[in-house]
Image (cartoon, rainbow, N blue to C red; front, side, top):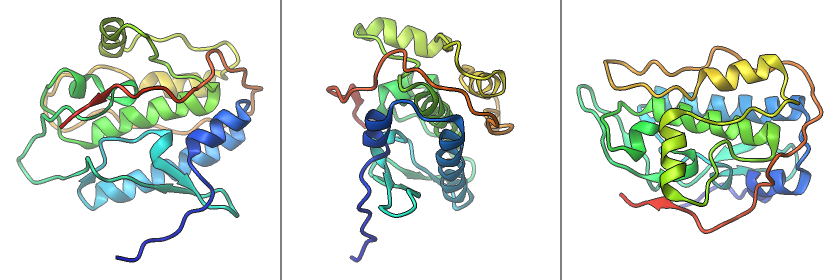
Length: 199
């Protein structure tokens, strides 16, 4: 098997190193992530473990490449997923509670968490106590830092909405942030032992 060599490292390391990403930089990364995820979904592939550690950058243009499809699944007509998998901090409520889901909507949730992380240098759901972490994810309870522009905040807030399964996925993105705030991290992103939900 021949695979592309991506030498720019993880988006995770880029965030940790730079911390104060401008909104224009965050938007550029985010648009690329959405484009890649949309490509996968068009081909009936749901990733289920989207996070900065699984997003690689090339060395020249800092273009995003989606990696680690070990937990991905092929969507089939009329079939729903229930498997709990992925990294808890980025996982949708449907995933951590074992509810039925189609697939794309859980990737969209993860993208929303990634966007927050790009803009803020921190995770929206980041508790040391697992019970508290799960409760906040299920309630979509997080604090939006004051430096995030209204447009970006509206976009982020439109995504993390717990949606019990009732037909086709309704969690989607309506747009992308458009201005350039100075981002101040509220809680620096640090690599920590991953709370991983095993499939």
